[in-house]
Structure formats: structure tokens, C-alpha cells
Length: 270
Ligand SMILES: Nc1ncnc2c1ncn2[C@@H]1O[C@H](COP(=O)(O)OP(=O)(O)OP(=O)(O)O)[C@@H](O)[C@H]1O
Ligand SMILES: [Mg+2]
Image (cartoon, rainbow, N blue to C red):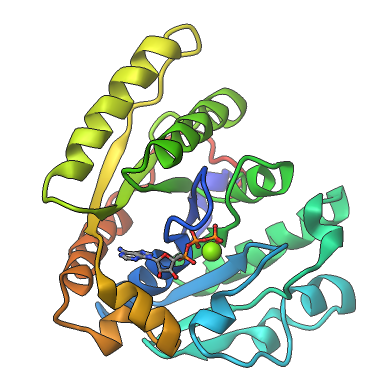
């Protein structure tokens, strides 16, 4: 069967170069905002070494990805309903064996992602930071990749490295960019333009990726407060600039979900 004919939802990997830029917070809140549109959304905690999506959402999982991959627990048993109306597949934390994905583990993860995609409109993969093999292997399971960066120079340098590696190793030539924690409106777009100029200049030989700007989100105290309360920003500060920004991004994601799947083989044969 042509993989492009396979039914099922879209899989989006959320990643970053630098750690701590807001991937997990953005992923969880975007998931809730897209679910609020009446779509079925699942988030897989794909930060296999330092999983914490369950902590951020105050979930107390009995089973996680580890049980699925090693003990044959069905995906449905480990899938949890998160506040916000989406599903979460937690991962166990501190599992050193996942610092590398063996071919068997890769195959197992791929089946889990495919099963989630078959039952949801959107599957978000909350990956770990950096460009380790395990992160790249996980991104390879997604149709598209969203890179989260902040305006900090170190986060931008690391985002550049991520775009470069993704373009070179996975031919990811249309990655999405989200600039989190901006301190003035429009800062994200300026950063995207600067990033594009750097990519054009230094990756001319491999064919520079063309960034697609998902948008920007403001630096907002409600983020820290939500994480401390283990709640969604959308729920504990629904009127905050950050919550408004997240809902706006979710509308853009919805447009992407409704657009036809691009032609050509998908990265992992979905
Ligand atoms: N828009 C924002 N405004 C203010 N603070 C934010 C914002 N987004 C995230 N943060 C803060 O950054 C912290 C780290 O966020 P989060 O855990 O989502 O990052 P991460 O990229 O998933 O980290 P890791 O790389 O460790 O997985 C949060 O606890 C939150 O306090
Ligand atoms: Mg995280």
C-alpha cells in the first residue's frame, strides 16, 4: 500500500536544540487547545530519559511506554485522559536503556506511534532536547517537526544546529518554528527571518531548509505558575497573553491538519 494512502492522524514531533525552552508546556497546552476544537489529540511523552509530562499534568500513571515496549501492555491500557480533553501516553523517567534506541525498540516505538495516529487526529511527540540519536530517531517517526526556541542566543544557536542536522540527515526542508518567551510582539518573526538568513548562507550546499513560522508566544509569569500548580495555562490562566497565544497557534495547527498531506514518501512510512 502506498504509505500516503494510509488513514490516520498527523504526527508532529516537538523538539528543540537547547533544553528548558518550553517544549513540554507548549505541547500540553497546544494539545488542549486543539482538543477544544473537537479534535482527538494524543501526546506521547517521547522524552525517554527525563520524562515529565505526567508531572506537569499531575497524572499518576500506573503504566507507561516502558511497560508497552517491554511487557507487552496494550497501548490503550497506558493511555490516560489529561485535563484539557486530550490523551497522554506517559514514559517512565530515568530509563537509561533509552539513551539509545535499539532496532527492536525503534520498531516498538514506531508501532506505538502508528497506533496512536490511527486513533487520533493529531499526535504530538514531546521529545527531549538536543540532537542525540534517540531524539533524532523519535523525530524520524513524525510527519513533521516543530522546533521550539527562545530569543536567547544559546537557544538560537542550538536551534540552528537542529535545523542543520534535520536537513542533512532527514531531509527535513520545511520545519516549523515556534519562538517561545518573546518579550515584544513581532520578535519571533524577526528571529525567524534572521535564522532563515543564516540557514541560507551556511547550508547553501545541502539545500537550506525553508522555515515555516508557527508563531510566537510571550514570556508570561502564568507559565511558571501553571507548572507549579501542575495545571494547564489554558485552565489556570485562560485570559493570559500566553493562553491567548496558544489558542492562536492551535488555530494555525488546525489549518495544517486540514491541509492535504504533502505528496512524496513520508519519513517513516506512515
Ligand atoms: N512562555 C513562557 N513564559 C515564561 N516561562 C515559560 C514559558 N514557557 C516555558 N516557561 C518556563 O520554562 C520552564 C521549562 O519549560 P518546559 O519544561 O516546558 O521546557 P522543556 O523544553 O520541555 O524542557 P526539557 O528540555 O527539560 O524537556 C517551565 O517550567 C516554565 O516555567
Ligand atoms: Mg520537556
